[in-house]
Length: 83
Image (cartoon, rainbow, N blue to C red; front, side, top):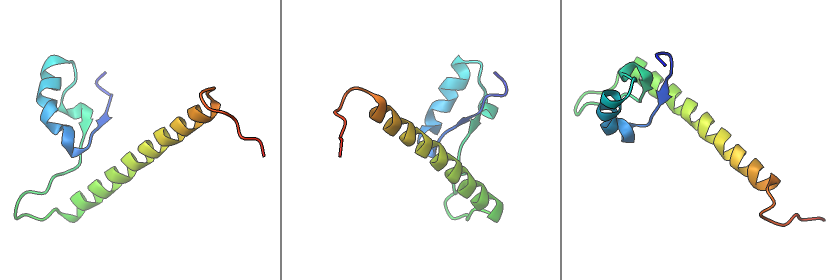
């Protein structure tokens, strides 16, 4: 969908050309941190974007961590401690 947005960290940007050429997605469907060019500092706006983006990703990762913990607690894989 044109409105879908996928947040990626900088490690996956090398795959974007292949993804956009083999799917209906384009570069506007991806949100990635701004990389610093050698010898050129990021602007204040770019620093704020990266900080905000990092916070967003951390919240999502924490939510997935909570889901994993919840599923482990509710599964029948382990015993239940009774005090």
